[in-house]
Length: 430
Ligand SMILES: *Cc1c(COP(=O)(O)O)cnc(C)c1O
Image (cartoon, rainbow, N blue to C red; front, side, top):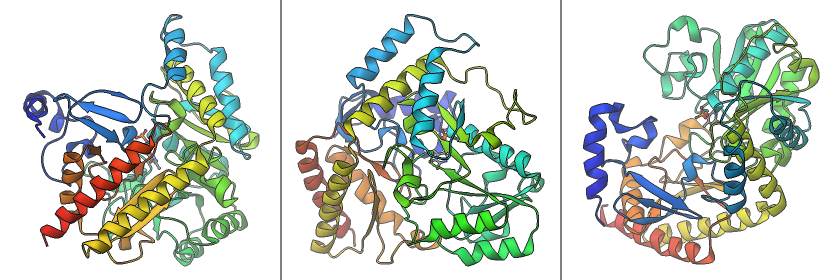
């Protein structure tokens, strides 16, 4: 497989863009080699500038749940384009999408649209602080909540628990109110609560998706929710990845927990920049113009993005693909484990609905620490052999593979063969 044109664009891109990318994971740093440049995509496939075609399990890191260029979404966008691009005033479609979103989450009376998951989360934190009048927040090691200052902690290492910033440029002052707990460890949350009076919120990815897929243990979320309630702390569910993806009502529907504030992104815009945060009236009425918590956006609720979101969520609701996603993911898990066993490779597979993650480790992966036991070199070899076999995966051991409704039976068969070839390649490097 040739990547000549990608290589050429990469070199050119390096001159004008930082690392030739606009988001770091796209740089392929953790799998070695240079990034591919994409020309186009349709359905379950994505095509690079050298005309190599891949089954796409990246899906832009989640948003393209219906596959690329779904007919109904494309039609809705085309129709909306004719009316203009942005007005800086309210439109009917904002209400329509808000209704769909609020109906999906039981604890959400009102929603505010923003332009990214990062924005949704940083606004939700501000809201929790405004509502409770308290400053501290608890986040979990390994959970990613976008790149705002207060949350760029413990997206990283063992030092994480000491609240050391995970990025240069984040002042210690910005993270001094961020407390770190261990995912799936209620005791670690209790200890913070015992020690600190002024905790406004606990923020969590109800299913971890940014340390690889990590599931909550039985009862963990329920107990966390009870603990928060008992201490007048708001629970913020960051469902930017899981919202609409593994169930229409997100992970909260599956685990039967309701957070006080829910953050959304990715799927909600169907490929356009949309994020959202929502809660019950009492909380949302704190937000300007009803209340004194300020948050704004020139392009928030952008008409084209709203049209794309409405069409995507409407079609998703109609198709209700969640059972099928589970079955497909189960199948893929089977292929992974079978091939790993065949070639004597340590592998643990975690999955949640349409998100699946093979970890190159024999350990059970239940939190950030256990995820870190994975052999990332093996993943790198696996990744490139999957590319050679026509499968586009996220270029990191710690990113979920995403399924779309556009995947065909033939794709799945091809995937099984690719997986076997890639495992064989991994074994040959042992
Ligand atoms: C992707 C993601 C974000 C950040 O969203 P952006 O749109 O990239 O800013 C926040 N939280 C979670 C759980 C995510 O997966």
